[in-house]
Image (tube, rainbow, N blue to C red; front, top):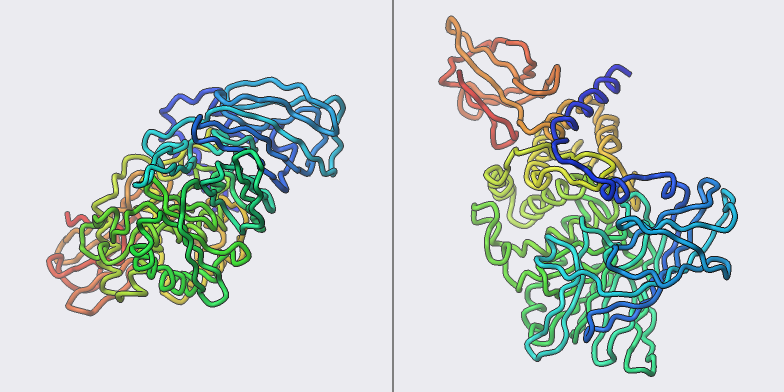
Length: 537
C-alpha cells in the first residue's frame, strides 16, 4: 500500500512538471471519458461509405452497436466540425443533436436502459481534411501513381479517426469486430483491414469492397487504401500473407517483402503468436511513409532498407533491414493487440515497438549487432519532457517514448536477465491480448512476474526528463557510489568491473556506499547494458 501511495504522489508531481500547455474545452471533449462517453461500450461498427476521389468526398453512414453501461438520455459520438451530420437514426426515430467542436451530443427521446444493446445509424458526408505531412499529421493523402491513376489513403493517429468517420474517438473503447464497406470508382479498388468478404458492383460506376475485421480494433487503425494495386500472397505457417502494391513495383516488392517471414518468426518467438491470425497479415503500399493499421500495415519506405535509406541509429546496422516493415509490423503486438487506454501512455506502443527493432536485429544478425543498434539510439534521445503526457486531454508525452522507451526496456532486460524478461514480455501479450491498458497495468505485471518492485525504475524513465545518474568519487583511496535521480529512494542494480571482464552487480541508492576494491580510474560501468549517466566526481 505504501508503494501505491508513493506512486500516486510521483505521478501527480510529474504531471505538474509537464502541464505548461494550456488545454482547451476541445481537448477535454476529445480526451476525457465523460459521462456521455462512459455510459456506453461499443461492440460493433459497420462503416458503409462511398469515397469519390474526383471530389475528395465521403458520404454514407456508420452503424454503431453498443451496450449501455449506465442509463442515459444523452451520448457523445465524435466527428470533426468540417464534416456534415446528415441525420442520426435510432429505432426509426431521427434524433436531435448538438455539436461542440468535434463532439456530437445525441439526445434520445427516452431514457436508454442500462444493460441493453442498441444500434445507432449515423449518416454523414463531407470532405475530410487533407494531410500536409502524413503520417505525422492526420488526414487523407490524394495523389497519382506513375500511370496517372488515383492513389489515396488515410492516416489519422493522434489527430483522430473522427476526422473521416463518426465513432467514439477514444482509445479505451474498441469494438469486438467491424465491417468496413467502401465503395470506390469501379476502375479502382479499396483495401482495408481484415478479410475481403465480397466485391459488389453498385451499377453506378462504383464498386463496393466489403472487409470484415473479426478482432477488436482501435479506431485509428481503421483504414482505406484506394488505387490500382497488384495483389500477391504467401503463407507463414498457417498465417495468410497478402501484399498490395502499385503495378510498377511488383518485382521490387517480391524481393523486399522477403523480410516479412523472418520478422514474424522472430516476433512470434519473443512476443508470442501473431495476434490476428483470423484477419491475416497485409502490407499495402501507401503514398505516405507507414502506419501500423491493424492487419493492413501501411508501407511507404520506397523498397529501401533503413528509414528511407538512412540508418536512424547512425551505426550502420539499421541499413541491414527495412525499418518500416519491421517497426510497423511490431505494432501488431504492441499498439494493436495491447493498446494504451489514453494516448498519454503511448510509450506502451512506441517503446516496445522501438525495442522490437533491436530484437529483430538480434534474431537476424546476433547479439553484438543488437547492442550496437540499441545503444545507437542514445544519441536520438532529447530528454526534453516526460514520456508520459497529461491524461484526459488527448495529449502525448515526449517523442522520447520511442528511443528512451526502448532503452528503458533494454535496461530492464539487463536487470532481470533474459529468461525472466522475455517470459514477462511474452506474458503481457497473453494477459492483455486484444485489450486496452494503462502504464500501471504494465508496471504491476512486471512487478508480479519478476518478484521485484520495479516501479521506481519505470517512473524515473517515464515520468521525469532526466535519466538516472550514477555518481562515483574517490575518498581516502576508497571508491564511493550513489544514484542521483528524481524519484525518492531510487534504487536500481547496475554492473561494474574493477578489472577486464570481471563484472559485479552493485545496488546503489541515493546514499553513498563504498566499493570494496579498486581505485576510481579502474572502475568501469556497463553503460552498454544500462541507459544511465555516469559521472566520476
